[in-house]
Amino acid sequence: MDIKRQRKAIDDIDARLLRLLTQRVKAALGLARLKQKLGLPPRDAAREAEVLGRARKTARSPLTPQAAQGIMAAIMRGTRASVRKRKRA
Image (tube, rainbow, N blue to C red; front, top):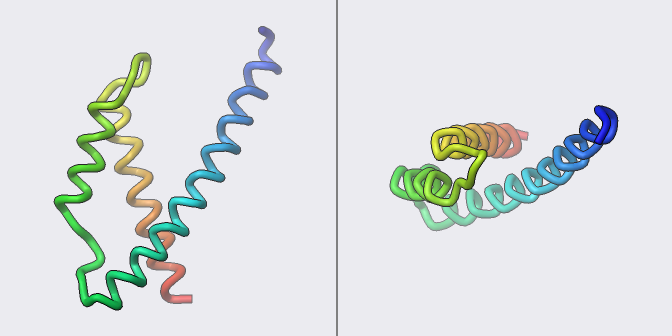
């Protein structure tokens, strides 16, 4: 495969990831509204630990468990930031 094809393959994966991340933020917005309605706190440390632990356990080579956990932590931070910004708008 040449460089252009490899980059195109990565670009296609990135586009799919961004679509999935948009869906994740929409789901998180719905969850935030429900939690607010039920009087629950916006964050759940146990749930966050569960998500990060699952990322570590399900990582497959060449993705390391540490990298998977770091990526999920970044996704969760980005999701929280998007939800906070959206709730203020």
